[in-house]
Length: 261
Image (cartoon, rainbow, N blue to C red; front, top):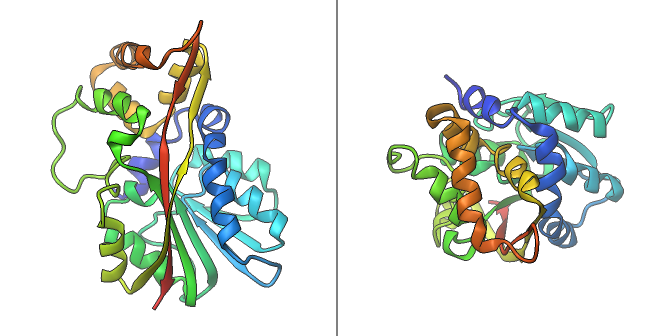
C-alpha cells in the first residue's frame, strides 16, 4: 500500500478540526518562511503536503503561481474550497506528478516526516525544483522542547514500539538529520531557523478535537480504541491546563531552506 493511501486516510478523519484548531498555529512559521523567500508573480511554488491550504493562501498575496499536492483527500477538499481554480492534486510525496525543474520554490511543512522514505520524498521535491531553486522543509523542533510532544509520546506508547526509521511527528527532528538527507540527494541547506508556535485550546473538547484529527492519534484510536486515546490525551494535558479550561502548550518548529545544487 502506498504511503498516500495510509497517511491519506489517517489525515482525512477530521479535516475541519485540523483547519480550525491546528493549522493556524503554524502561521508564525509560514510568515517567517515567506519573509525569507523572494516570491513574486514570476515565481512558481509547489506546497508538497499542502494540507488544508493555509500556507498557499498566504502565498497568493505574493503574486506567485501556486500548486499543491497532498495525500489526504479530506484536507485537500478544504484547500479546494479556499483556493478555487488552483491545481491541487491527491498525490504521494514520493511520486510528485510534475516535470523536472518546474518550480522555483517547493515547500513541505509537517509532511516529509510522514513519507515512507524521507530520502525519496526529498529527492522528488528536488527533482521538480529548478536549478538554484529553493526547497523548504518545516518540521517539529526537538521533542523535548515541545509540550505537545509529551502527549504524542503518551499516545504512541499505547502501541507496540515502531521499527527504526518509521515515519512520525519527530522522525526528522534529530540534530543534523535533515541536513544529512538533503546533502545525500543534492541539496545544500543554506538557512535554518526555529520558530515559536504555541498551541492554545479553550476547553477540553477543543483539546481533544485538535489531537484526534492528527494521523498519530487516529492510528492509535484504530488499534486501541478512541476512548482510551482520548483519556490519555486529557490526562497528559492536565499539566498544561491554566486557569479554568484553558490549555497552553509551548511548541517549537524548525524550518530549513535548501538550494538545489
